Amino acid sequence: MANNRPSNASSGGGGAASGSGSGGNGTMNEHVEFTVKAEENLFLTGTRSTIQRVVAETNYSCLMLKTQRFSSLFRHYAKYHGLRKDDLEYYFVNPLENEDTPESVQLQRGDTIMVRKRRGPAGPEGSPSADGTPPPPDEKDYFTAMHGLMENQEHTDVIFETAGGGDGVRAHRCILAARGEFFKVAFRTGA
Image (tube, rainbow, N blue to C red; front, side, top):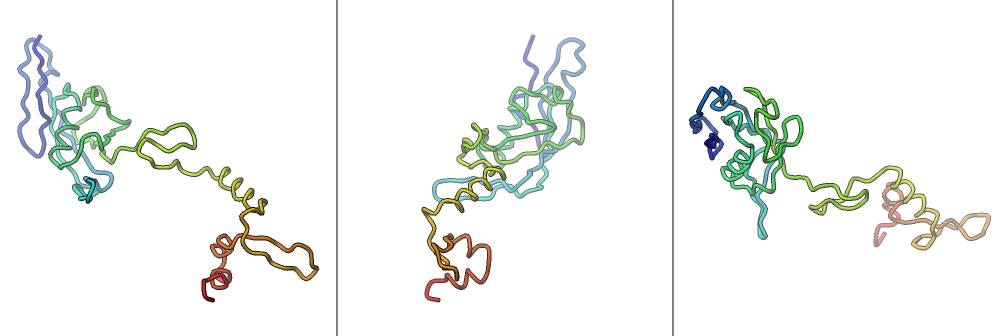
């Protein structure tokens, strides 16, 4: 049986090549018209500069065979906008893979596929993702670390003497300055 998938995704009103099916498979030549929408601004980043290629919320009209793999759409969208295919990820209800088709994800006419910069896969908890982005802080870990910082006097850099004598109260200038305008002014260099 011949491969009836066109080699390119069609967009912007251009005609899509439709395969010439043999036999009575009615879905072989059926098309679906949909939109690809940028979730965020999309940039091409090089070693010397970064160029914005797509503005967030920009719609891009597409027409594909229902049985055509999304890999052709991914290649076409990236090439058309001057972006690297591997820098982008697409999702409909779930993330879309190269082998998915409009038919396999139940894409209907008028539906929207979202595109954004690829997020790195999450590594083990607490480790950065593949793109080097640190994981979001866990509130419990944050407060535990801050409490430990307050209990540990090793890095304190100011001592408040108390009227009753004793060792005084040790503190961290950066924390005090971040929490109050009085300390921010008091610890300012040259003040």
